Length: 527
Ligand SMILES: Nc1ncnc2c1ncn2[C@@H]1O[C@H](COP(=O)(O)OP(=O)(O)OP(=O)(O)O)[C@@H](O)[C@H]1O
Image (cartoon, rainbow, N blue to C red; front, side):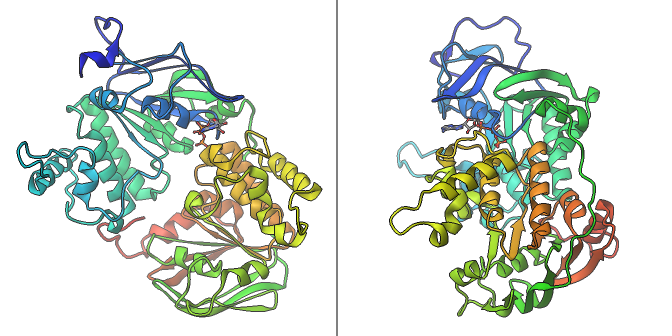
């Protein structure tokens, strides 16, 4: 590290890989962080948990120099203070790297291009990048991780697990073995069960060498299982610092995060009515062919399977979000074409079909618009005046949904892009729930939300079913499926391989997806 990247005298014997003190950050009247202290030892896997909007991503963005902290903060790595705001070159020199929520990879580039992006070494005379050298550098870092990959493959073709390996390779390439700190900011959320197990094996091997890891996650189970210590944030302040994880469990962590005890959800009695609200015939999309489905009013129908089995494609086609190859959908007596040539999104909206996608930022919310505009957008055409859209109904709907889903901060006029990831997810869900659609298709609705928000979302989905909505829930999360669904269809190779109904148990769902009667998982498959 260059001398100018540090200020103040170095400590004699640094005990902490990372030491953050008095870290505060305000955005206007929102105080995202208030006097935060965080200490991480060398070779420690440290968890950071807290409700949506409590300041976790803001802390990471200060570590990487995206935001300047308020005056008075200090950040030291291996006992050496970093000049603030952090400059990316100093962050890298100190061995701090971040794997973001979406892993920050470019699908159209190859493995080696993704790993080396921003690290290319140009020839001294020619100033050209030597492709072979860059590929070798990538192979070396993958070999260090003991995860050889074909470096010439496009990242968009890789499984979620292999993408995670590429993101980790990119993060650790500057670290000397055993040094540095990697921050994983909600990076495990798209990983299935076995990919997650292998991800943690890899992380543990890095930590055993001496590298430190900060794991930010809403999956309290993995935090309790994988980390050595955990720090809990609430409303921008540290409420518990560096607790030994062996001394906590999910229930106590939840209480620390929320400041209250959460009564866990059990199943509720079925609310399924006789009337079929939506029926699909001959649906073909991606690997799915010839799928027939009936969904009743009040029914919550789960679709699950390994990624690539077709359950995501089926859900997206049912919602009109993906043009199918063939098929029709009849919703509350209205016939819609699902295929590419004839389908039209407006017809789906008119028929009362709503979709909450997994990739909410790309496909779900309008970031520049306010919370109120986003929440009420689907109903503006019918309820808005000719010259004015804003009115009492918008105000009432927005206030009700902010309260129902505990959207934070509770400001109707805040642009949605200033909300934390989990709160954006709530806005997207609230936008469709407020209108009581005939058919509501949800893809991973509780992904990236905290344990309290998950509770609110489960309640809101049940309420929509009680109001007569037919719901399709596409998910790899056995907890959501077991708690919410009346029926679960398990997909394999584009077909429904199993139907589960009645008292649904998480283990039975996992077993049906991965179990003995499932063919062995193929190399590179994204589970
Ligand atoms: N650029 C910004 N402008 C205004 N407010 C912001 C901005 N970025 C974050 N905030 C606010 O700061 C607070 C902390 O947000 P942050 O994204 O750090 O939360 P988080 O703990 O990472 O949440 P999540 O778990 O949902 O990702 C929130 O109230 C958020 O609305």
